[in-house]
Image 1 (cartoon, rainbow, N blue to C red):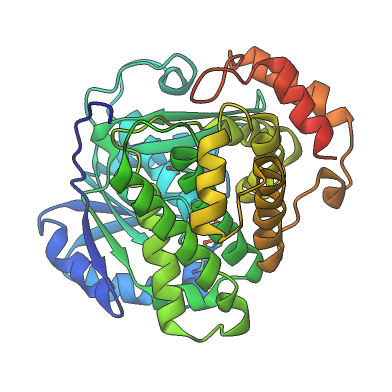
Image 2: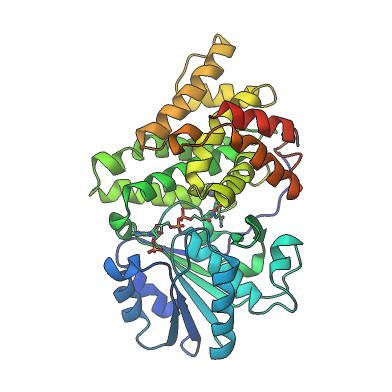
Length: 384
Ligand code: NZQ
Ligand code: ZN
C-alpha cells in the first residue's frame, strides 16, 4: 500500500428532514450567502426548508450558478460576497453549485486574478467557510476539496483543490432527489461509478481494503442504479445511491492506492467544447479507455470482471472484452448513451479534443502517465 494522510473533516447529516440541522451548524452571528442554481430548489420545497432553518440568521442569496459553473458567473457572486461582507456560504444544489461556491469562497479571499487558481495553480491561503445542502448525488463535491470551473471565454474547464474549500458540513436528504429529471439521475449514477473506477481500475499495490470498498460501491450502483428508474419512489434506493456517490469521492477509497483520472480529463475537454453533460462524456470515454489500457490495467480489469461482474475469467482476453461490454450495458441500463454518434458527433472530435489536451498540458495522463495524445486520439476515434 502507498503512504497516505487521510482526513475528511466534512460532517454529514444524512436522512429525511435533516436540512433543519443547518440552523445548528452555521454560527448564529454569521452573514450567510445562500447560493443556488437555476431554480429547481424553488419548485421542490428545498428553498423553503432552507429558509425555515435560517430564520434566525442574517442571510442573502445568489441564484443562477449554471451547470458546469463559469468563472464569469462566480465572479459576480464574489462581488456580492465582498459588498455584503459575507462570512459563510451555504451552497444548495448539485456539483455545479457546490463547485462554484468553492471557487467563490476562495476567490473572495484571493489577492490577484482568481483565474490563476485554475490556470496556474496559484496558492490558496484561506477561504470563506462553506456548508452544503446536496440536491444531486453524483460528484462527491459535498465532502471533498475539489472544484471544476469553466471559463466561457477560452473554452477551458479546469480543476483546483484546496483543503480551505472543503465543506464544513453537508446535508444529504435522499428525499430531495425525487424531483430530479431522469437524465440527472443517470448522470449521478454514472459519475459516481466512474469516480470509483478511476481509483480502482489501476494496478495492485496491496490495497485490499480499498479494493473491497470500491467493489462494494460499484456493486451497489449496479444493483440499485436501475431501480431509481423502475422504483422511483423507493427511499432506500435513493439513500443507497446518494451514500454511494458521496463515498466514491470523499478520499476514502483513493487513499494509499494509485489513481487514474484520464477519463475525467478527456471528459472535461469534451464538456468545454461540445457542452455534453459531465457524466455523458465519461460513459463515452471509459469503455474505450479500458480497452486501450487493457495491458497496464490487466489484473485489475480481471479482478473487476470476476468479483464485481461475476464473469468467468478463465479465458482472460475474452473476460476483458466481456467486462467492457457489461460496463456499457450497465450504463445503458440507466439510459446513458455510450457513443459520440449518440450526440451526432463523429471523428472530428478526436483532433479537437487532442488539441485542447495539448493546450492544457494533458499529454501523459493516467496512473502510469501512459495516456499520450496519440492514445487519447485512438480512444476518441474508437468511441464514435
Ligand atoms: O440549477 P438547478 O435549477 O438547481 O437544476 C440542476 C441542474 O440543471 C438540476 N438539479 C439539481 N438538483 C435537482 C435538480 N433538479 C431537480 N431536482 C433536484 N433535486 O440538475 C442539473 C445539473 O446539476 P449539476 O450540479 O450541474 O450536476 P452535477 O451534480 O452532476 O454536477 C456536475 C458538475 O460537477 C463537476 C462536473 O465537472 C460538473 O461541472 N464535478 C465535480 C467534481 C468534484 N468537485 O469533486 C468531480 C466530478 O468528477 C465532476 O467533474
Ligand atoms: Zn466526475
